Every structure is written in structure tokens, then in C-alpha cells.
Image (cartoon, rainbow, N blue to C red; front, side, top):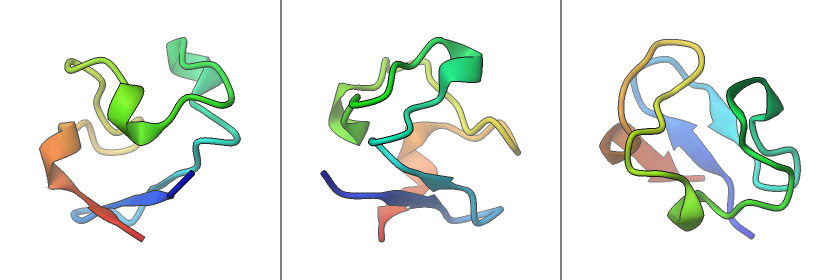
Length: 52
């Protein structure tokens, strides 16, 4: 699974780790994140992430 980087702040979403603090289980692909998921660091939406 591919990692994605938040363009504004540089946070890397790693699907192997997920985002457990926000209810996203490890193994969740970026494409499978809920539409309302936001960057846990700066709060921007998925549309501002780029493939690493």
C-alpha cells in the first residue's frame, strides 16, 4: 500500500500504521479512509495529500 504526504505540513499517512488516534485501523489504505478524515496534524482534507 502506498503512503501519502500532507502537502501543507508534511505528515505522512502510512496505511500499515493507520491513524488509531482517530479511529483508523492499521491496514487501512488511503483510498479507503472516510471522506471526512482530515490530517491529524494540520486538519486539511484528503484532497491536499499527494502520493509519496
